[in-house]
Amino acid sequence: MSDISPLDEWKRNQIEQISDTDLNEVSLLTYLTKTLFGFGAADKLAEELDLLSVSRPLFVTDAPLLNSPIGDTIRDMAEGHVVYSGTPENPTEQSCRDAADMYLAHNCDAIVAVGGGSPMDLAKAAALLASHPGELATYALANGGLDRITKACPPIIAIPTTAGTGSEVARTTVIITAGGQKLPIGSPYLIPALAICDPALTLSLPPRLTAATAFDTIAHCVESFSSSRINLPAEAIALDGLQRAVCFVEEAVQDGSDRRARWHLLMAAMQGGLSFPKGLGAIHALAHPLGETGVHHGTVNAILLPHVLRQNSKALGSKISRMAQALGLASPDMLPDFFTDLKQRTGLPTRLSEMGLNESILEAIAAKAEIDSCNTTNPPPLIKSQYLDILRAAF
Image (cartoon, rainbow, N blue to C red; front, side, top):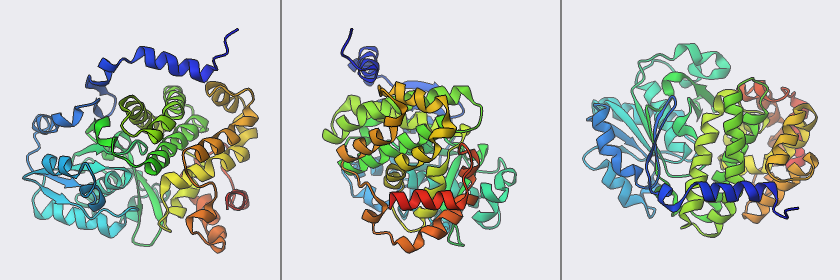
């Protein structure tokens, strides 16, 4: 009998299946978004813009990224074009409007988002504001905004520099609206026309941010897989993405230059985004209002994950067993503690109180979570008191 765990066996198969040569091959992946994936993919941006007949793109990024080790790479990409670099960590409606105004003032014909989830979210909302009237809350999913968004949105090109958000292939953006609420906005017309996923752009990501964004991926995959909707292709993608992220996150945290680990984490992040149509759940229903306080989204997801799993465990049925089995665990009861241990090994905080939050906000956060659009696909939807129990356990 083999002493190798199922997860180690899965990882070994992945290493055997995807060679060092494969890491350097730029693959064309066509779902709803045309995706170029692999080391060197970013070198093809100019060629792809020509194919899309884009000549005046607005580049959206953030100032810290321009001052990072890949800042020169981004400046080279955007040379000769207009750049908006005012993206905050949690994009606000005003920042989105500023980018939209720049887009219109310079008669741009597309938006290229370079960065993590924040620039990609801002780019989608800016595309919406540049082509549609009114405030962003009008278009929020919770307010019935899906059908108000039309094909008038300009094309979006997404180039992720973190491995977590999945926004490069997703239809949603999450913005702090003018009213102060952090709301998901979604539409097929906000799906990027092109995603360029180059793991080289993630090599300089610091260890803690590597871990936090990877846990964003893990939360996406867990929640999509667990969602109450029926979407078996998305379910399969989510389960594979979960295994991939768990297998390679520690290697990427320990050695940011590990090309194989970076490749697999970026692939897992994209898989998380591809599984979004199945819906998310209570982790994100809580993370959205918590994001209004300015805390980092992926880190909050990491803290909440074990507590939400405990809350949902009975309703998940065989799904929690399938996730445990995929991760090589002897019992589904081990799954929450497995993620807590992984979180600690990768250097992330384990409690909300460690993020500078005040316990006095928990009741208001629970109330907002109950009406968040992600609550509708949690298995099953939770009520305010249940969200408050999760928050108190996580605090």
